[in-house]
Amino acid sequence: MELTQEPVVRMRDVTKRIGSKTLIDRLTLDIPRGQVYGFLGPNGAGKTTTIRMMVGLMSISEGDILIEGASIKDRFEEAISHVGAIVENPEMYKFLTGYQNLLHYARMSPGVTKERIWEAVERVGMQNRIHDKVKTYSLGMRQRLGVAQAILHRPKLLVLDEPTNGLDPQGIRELRDYLRALAREEGTTVFVSSHLLSEMELMCDTVAVIQQGRLVDVKSLHPEAAEGRALETAFDVSDPQRAAALIEGGHLEGGRLIVSADRKAVAEINAKLVMAGIDVYAIQAVTRSLEDQFLELTGGKDIE
Amino acid sequence: MNNFLALVQNENMKIYRRVRTWIMFGLLVLLTILFGVLFSLDGGSQRMSAWDALDQLSFLYYLVSIYAAVIAADIVAGEFTWGTIKLLLIRPWTRTKVLLSKLLAVLLFTLAMSAVFFVIALAVSFLIFSNEPSQYLGDSPLSRILESLLYSYVDLLVIAAFSFMLSTVFRSSGIAIGLSIFILFAGNIFTLLFHPSRYAWAKYLLFTNMDLGQYRGGQVGPAGMTLGFSITVLAVYVLLFLAVAWLVFKKRDVAA
Image (cartoon, rainbow over all chains, first blue to last red; front, side, top):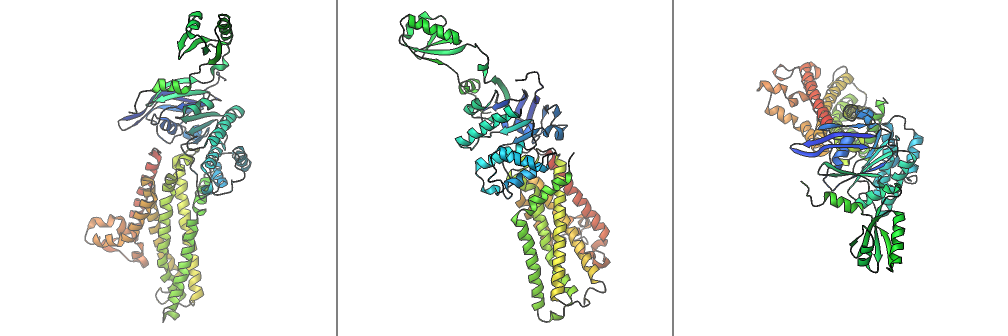
């Protein structure tokens, strides 16, 4: 990750008020370049509101959002030209064909040629149905067309609001692979919102957690890259009590011995246990899922 | 900065790729032919001049006004109903330019429909009836007919602007179509109720000024109203409608 580079998006104290209700409260967030960046929160936390402000569909009450250095408030045309987006469902003109829909959006961005439209069509695998009317499309096909319109002008930032809603597992998988490929191959930064934790875990490099309009946490999701890091490891053994007494820093949890250890230490502990005549049935890394962490962060709170 | 005309082209595509638009065209052509035939079947009017027939057929221009109201009602509201507004407004174009492209597309549509209507009505009149001097329209029948069609076109533009505003404000084509057509037909009733000869302020009402046909041939309207006066009042109303539409469209948060 090129940490030296400017973030694609800078949100500064972004606040949205409607009447006396504060939907988004001083949200400050940088989205680093080239990442798949998740935006996680329960329903009603303000994800869609934030995204709508990002793309200029909603006004910002206070603060500002800069996209590639241009304010979405004051330099809308410049800022938005870097963005491709699907906000909620990919709604298309049903009476037009898929191709006519793409042509419509292509005309609105400079430099999108017929070849580029076709490239986008191939990219999402819609060659065979692109000249059919959108009303004949399944949701999965409309989602693909939605992605195609969003990438037509090769945006630096792709914003997707709950993209997996209503997709079947096959469709979700395709979308996930596709987004990762886009970030890897074309360096596109992808900002994707969801309330599905498992989904985010598979797709994102970093996740920002939002709750009741406030940023709760920002987490990096692939820390394994850092070699030699100590992980919580569980040992399933024949005599947990004796094992716990034997291993320094170990404790029992659900009849298993839990130790924080890196790879090397795990092997040593194993040897130690076996030498002491304790049978080791299984050794597992305890990865607290994002779901656990998420519930820890947001748990127990109600929607205001 | 890329080509603004591309936006108008897009709006045109969204109008003319819909089956509905072609049903409108078809119905207009069919009804014009049908009424032409009916007039010719009417006993005694065999000797009707083609010019008089054309003048009679002009009442069908109401249909074009209705179409204009329908298209103007849908052009903004439709995007909200379909949810496509969210994809339309995240392009490198300000909302003002997007709205302007829609307004231009409506204008082009009214011109196209009017031209089609005039050509068809002219063709039907001269194919069915004989080219004799008019009994009612004086020496230059064509200019008389064009004059009243022009008046009707101004009314149509007012209706279209009204519908366009309602479409933008309420984001519902149903309300916009309903109210515009109501104005189109109920205008006369309002004029009777609030006649400028009885109420001085009534001459500033929209309805009172809508029927420019009352000034045909240089006549003066009630309470000293003139063609110039009515056109000024209508222009103010149209500008007001468009200003409201623009402000609302520019400022509105696009949610849901």
